[in-house]
Image (cartoon, rainbow, N blue to C red; front, side, top):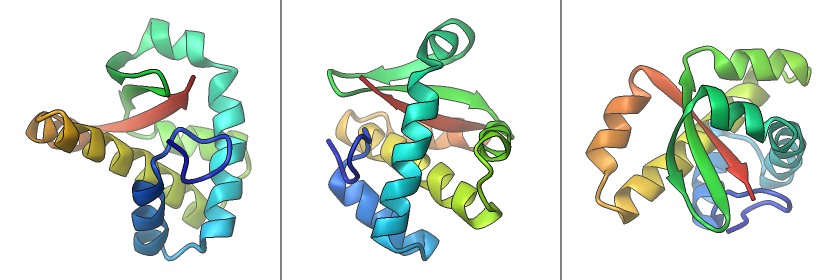
Length: 121
């Protein structure tokens, strides 16, 4: 775990997402920590309302409707670029889990119509 402090994102995923989003690692780390605090407060809601597609000792991953990250971005007053960087990081973490568990095709298909939210434990 942990490409950013207080984040359930793996280090390699963190660096990949930072590079793809053109956001420096320090900024992305701060964003992921802020978002994680917000998500952790709502984990029971995620468990009730959304499909959990992966879980481990470090994290739970949920599929949520498209537009979910826009809502979170609005709540946390994120810029469009910041929101996209965080959403990309969460999607990349799901892709990594899919690759590690031989579910990559399933998760890639899911990401065509939904978004991923990764909540740390």
